[in-house]
Length: 155
Image 1 (cartoon, one colour):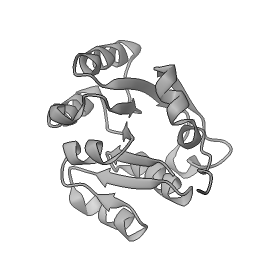
Image 2: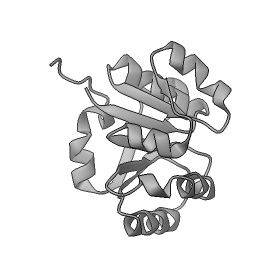
Image 3: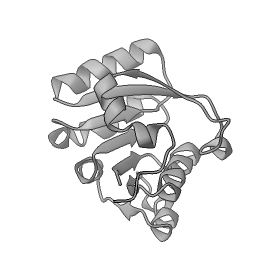
Image 4: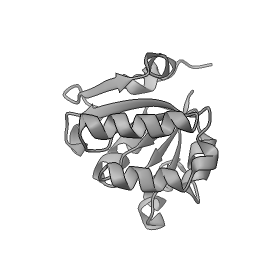
């Protein structure tokens, strides 16, 4: 079983969290507005009190925020938790935004993967959903079960 944190619980972040929970992953969630996390706690997610707590709780942290400035603002609150951590950003933006955030995270010791979601929230977890990834191959390989939508093997 892998542990994954989700930062940002809009429609897409919530869909990702629900799919990961359904697939048997341990999920920690954080959102600026805590009330968005509470339904996921009822489904088995743990609620983090801060972005740093969420990042520290899991092997992989997925950011699903509105844009790169929002992602950077959230990560700036958690700089002490970034060193050695795996982060996947599924935020909307440009390739330049992705490179800039990747450079910023690397300077803080984080391992970075960027992604683009080619689906709407109700499609997440289904055969028609596609997520494209760019960045650290090692990070992708470490978390391939979750990133490919597969369930972890029973231990």
